[in-house]
Amino acid sequence: MNAPAADTAVEMATDSERVAELIRQIPDPEIPAVTIGDLGMVREVEIDPATRRARVMISPTYTGCPANSLILDSVRETLCRLGFEADVDKALFPPWSTDWISDAGRQKLRDAGIAPPVKGESRRALFARVPVACAHCGSEHTKQISEFGATPCKALYRCERCREPFEYFKCF
Amino acid sequence: MAQHPDLVEYCLRLADDQLVLGHRLSEWCGHAPTLEEDLALANMGLDLIGQAREIYGYAARIMRRGCSEDSLAYLRTERAYRNLLLVEHPNTDFAHTVVRQFYYAAFMTPYWNAMTASADDHLRAVAAKAEKELAYHLRHSAQWVIRLGDGTTESARRMRAAIANLHCYTGEMFEVGGMTRRLVDAGIAVSPERVRRAWDESVKSVFDEAGLMPPQAPIHMQTGGRAGLHTEHLGHLLSELQYLQRTYPGARW
Image: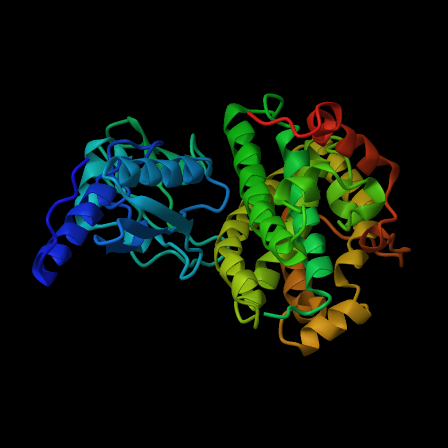
């Protein structure tokens, strides 16, 4: 593919930003309603338009989440398609937190029937409970059915008002 | 950069605990008492295996030549494994699984928390995530200890049996040898002595609520895992875990 002209610093910066944006738009393989940008997983994007090298650091969510390697591969694939030599790696530190999920991402989760994580609650006492609002009707009269759900990041809840089950993106 | 000479051995201890316990939890997949619990056990297993991969990968990078996270997991024999005897104990029944998980998580949650101040960048990074993951394991297993201990006559009987069988493997978690001492002095490792009080308090408060008690008479603590001296159960576990790579060396998919 043809590299866009990168004659000036401004154009180079724009190009970097465009590439970064395309990476942020990659959907999460487990929850395709949100992108890895919404989740706050894209930490560093360094592009050198002259050598066509790109270095990207991704913050994994849960250490053992099977989606992690798939996400790294998707990023590599995107960079390849754009004609870059990709250097993609995991950045374990600082540790990813659900507080990094953007407000837009939280709304998309809600729209997909997944209650977004409560902000600032990633550290909790052993049996402390935070009220979780129903993803459908917004009621806080909800009950946890299971601490662990279909993916490492989710728990199962039921709304006591509208009686609908829903998933909750756990605070982490 | 020159690494501390004991670092690889220390990494193997941590990662072997995680892999072996993660494998044990994976054995429940499709067999747990309820669907929700099946998911929970598999999720906790995934967390542990994910943590093990990070640490094996790190150890392999230090060891270099022909070493990878896979070769460490699949090609070492039983005597080379450094895990605690507690984590290789068979699942037995759900009560044993719960008690084993609770003992381990009550120990590792404060342990990883202390490790977030390690002088080793990689271990510090793993610890920052593992600490949060283990806090979930601790809470989940503690809830089951309470529910089963304070449940029916049968569930309480099974919990007492599990505690009687497993308590003798908890002493090994707190052993401090020369290697640990050297790494603690270097600011890399966490001394298990530092988490003794937190572990005692978790066990006491959860057992109190569950109406359970640790064994009252002094018991002989079983040990040997850190030196590669295991119970008869680890060999059987490894024969399953390593089957594919032993049968078809180098197989990839």
